[in-house]
Length: 597
Ligand code: GDP
Ligand code: MG
Image (cartoon, rainbow, N blue to C red; front, side, top):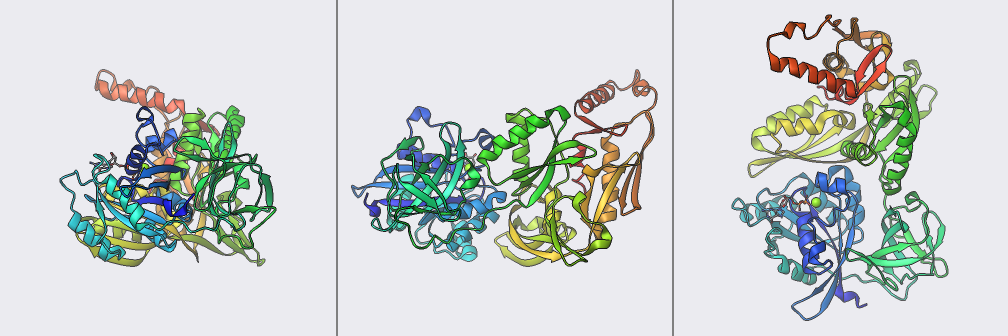
């Protein structure tokens, strides 16, 4: 294969700016699928992704394009995930490309993820083609968005393209630009095999499928290969490409992207970013590689019905076959029994996994308070890392504690900036940068991750009427005054409700949680005190009064809708309860309780 006829690229965009729709158009024109197979958003293959409208697993597709210049080209489109929690996977997908299509919604302009993604592309030395999408909409304003690209990103705009991914307008131009402006790969076929491990997942029929980008040499069935990071050796069984349908090929050559299978048991044996070489004729130096993406948010997952523990275990095993970015280990709670401590890339990742467990595996789950990883310096001199409040050593043993901070980039229309700034301040944020762009503001903040995991997304959205966009990356660890707050219900400490909070927020949070629980826990036949405590000291308290003999008595003959509502509420409440001591606590209390100021 002539490398000058290959182009490898990703599409990068802020969520909803039209990445998947553009990919669909490219696949449509480049004939990878029959029209009857062409359902929208073909790259978003998992159901849950389609439902949420986001792309989780990076996918690659090989396309054929006959150019106006008479030559036939091979395009490898590497999809990148679209959500903030998966920023890491964007970088790794970009490492397999020479170029990127930067898609910007011309009715919206630059948003937080536009910026963070384009910086990742620039860091990877990619050539960038800027594309303004949605020009079919009357509110599209190319002049304005062009100026943003020049002023904010600093990219030249003399070769931008205006398209409508929806109507197809401008798509041929995109294809021609890819040929004209993106560089072809320049590998050496005579060198030893050197390939980048881009991605891997578990397939029911094939076992672990590994996506690779060949840099030098070639790879074909029967070859003995080595993963350089793990030194593990395998014999290649199958080599192929996605068109997007899977198709076997005889070999993959420099510049090509495709998959291999070689009887690998676990996805965790495939380190993303690892270099694959030949055992017989190995390359001298591996590729630079990446830091592995690692979970930053942890929580406990428990079956609502304790009898479902094994089912939960099996389900987590199955899910982790395909998603090596979340971790799980068994734990037990005196309140909730046996469950798992799970680690995620962010809060949305947590929600996705939880939803998949509930939908695909038909599980009812209790989720405990999300926690970040704290570094604790002990008086003994040792440093330990914990992500479960119940692992926190005795206060007297602790010299100091550190918590992780993130760097958040937020774009918001000017009229909401006041509220966004007070939100960031309330969350202990420190401003790094603030600049005005048209009628919008870009703010960069350092924020403690601990404050983000509870309700930051929700609050940001609501204080900006949904207009704020947000992206984040890990930043640093900072010393902090943190305390472990326990919640007592009816005098019993409920371990699953403990959280680590900043000292200055403890009292307010304690009060808010007690109030929230008071509203979530139904009345019982007896009085239930709800208390928040730090060490032995009670800092907040609420009381749930005992139930009257007949809840409905006072509605009798009166307001019918109110009566029906009460009954419905009781019914819904009964469905998902956890008893702790003598008290029934609704399942949603465990997470809802944290969504408090
Ligand atoms: P992604 O999140 O970047 O993958 O964005 P999608 O491709 O899912 O598009 C987000 C929404 O914008 C969908 O409702 C699309 O139908 C719509 N959309 C995408 N491109 C266009 C376009 O050119 N014109 C219009 N009017 N809508 C578009
Ligand atoms: Mg998409």
